[in-house]
Amino acid sequence: DAKTTQPPSMDCAEGRAANLPCNHSTISGNEYVYWYRQIHSQGPQYIIHGLKNNETNEMASLIITEDRKSSTLILPHATLRDTAVYYCIVRPGNTGGFKTIFGAGTRLFVKA
Amino acid sequence: DAGVIQSPRHEVTEMGQEVTLRCKPISGHNSLFWYRQTMMRGLELLIYFNNNVPIDDSGMPEDRFSAKMPNASFSTLKIQPSEPRDSAVYFCASSLVGGVPEKLFFGSGTQLSVL
Image (cartoon, rainbow over all chains, first blue to last red; front, side, top):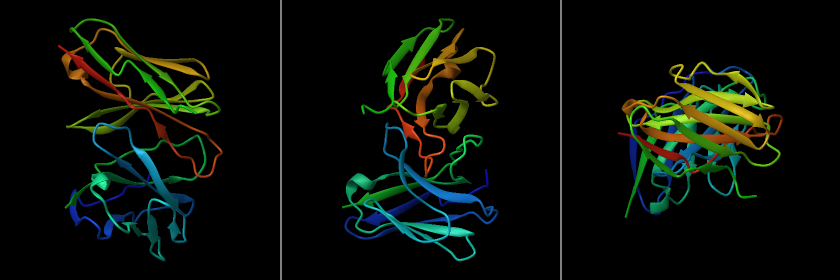
């Protein structure tokens, strides 16, 4: 799997947008960017994924740079319940021959 | 669907004892993963199965660890004998290979304490 780099921690005020960056400069052409989050004591939860285009779902938005070497996960209106560790992962999109490897992630603290 | 089901939720045992962790993947999923999480090492992939066949067990730390998947709806992770350094949260996850995207769905984990 391509390696990703994320800041170890970030703070965000409740109600404001949380922008979590991820660098993946060695990403290959067939690799997707996936984001998961892990709320304390729970298993990781899938958030969103993308290949080239920006993506949005009910949880978040994903902005991928044109050269695909970095991306940003955006939580538009962060709440206290969004406090979690956020993992950025790159891997091929839909094949069983590859492992999903989690790095250290970014610990997001949403403050009232 | 009830999601990925793991049991037990908590396990406390003494060093040297055998420990068996259980996982029921989401019905219809064809890949299953075992992860271990500690503060020091984060979330580590131990082994994963595709269509009940172990594909990669390179993350299994020692021969004391073994995993089986006798059918599509059940998997076990066994530690024999257990040691204090095995204390961790063990997560099971499943996915549908060929689905777009290939999302992992995690269980609630088993908190293992080896005294």
